[in-house]
Length: 317
Length: 140
Image (cartoon, rainbow over all chains, first blue to last red; front, top):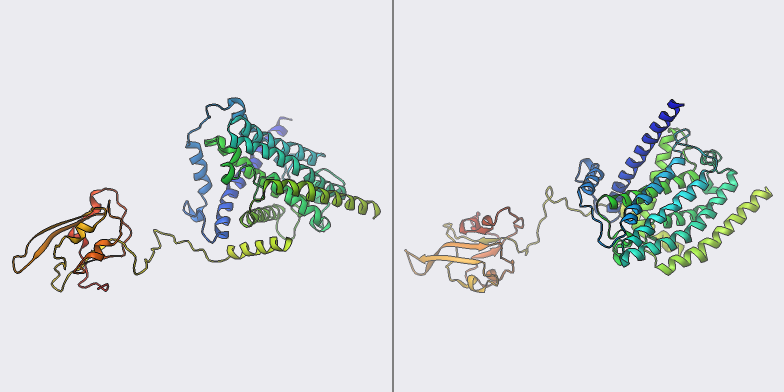
């Protein structure tokens, strides 16, 4: 019993260390790749190829002055970054990295994911509201509207996958993709999922709630030091989570020839991350009304269509 | 619309694999164009004497007032010889008016641009520092 608990805790610590390292290097990867996309080099001064840059960034954040703005609601102001950080990291509890490298495999993993990842929006909303600042508030409101609008088609796209696999456990979903990835069976669902997850993770072209040129970083305007750092880690952890989910639900998870399962998983995840960065480097930000129109008038009906067609085909054959 | 999205992705991907235009400065140096206005150079004649006749036109025309000329009467002939010529690079705006106005073409704008320094004194340069180290400049 005790041994089990200790083992589980060790497992949690190891997996979270791996996740946080990946997240740190995701920031470096993003900066270097964006550099290459813009025909420049990106950060390459700290250590070989800039590999120590995330450490330098982290140290810098620690030594920055920790400010709480005068008219902020102190409790929520401090609570907000914690919520967005914890909400994302708790999602990783059910994300399997390989056949047996996961913290827990619960039969309602997908439901758990949807529920916990939606909590993240509270962090953003509370941050925007408690900062007592109109730009932050605008960012917070936009975040709420955007999250609600895109969570529905996201869930509907996922239901297509659930119908095909017949299970809500992520390990089962991955195992049911042996031989045929769901990106082949669910192309429309995949595109819907991709659009929605871009909006959920607050990535370009849907980064409306922190757009630095109209809202001066939106809900993060009043944050500094490690409180900002927590938002930042949370955001990149969310991107990492999104890449993991795309890999698990549509790209066959850790399945692949020759290489070990873990290697395949990380190759796929970082390929997804590269695509995220590629999309960021390519598309301009959409306008707020375009964002809402896209969600309710295009993506949502398509998600319903995808769901109905999948269900009909599953029943017929 | 979908075609445009794909064309956009293709364009950025091409740039991803193209050569970076970044100049890694301390290791790689920039070559300024011919007419670049960097630190001044005082030209000399065959006897390595400055061409400057200390007429003081550059001192007058300088909008920042950063030129100071010290001179004495020429011991072996007519006119004056320059004994010191200081340019205060803390104030110089590199407009090049001193070069334009010089009747003897004794001063030209050089190509040196690395003029950062840790103390102010070293940026007030005297005649010795400004003199052309070569016999004759190609700019003449």
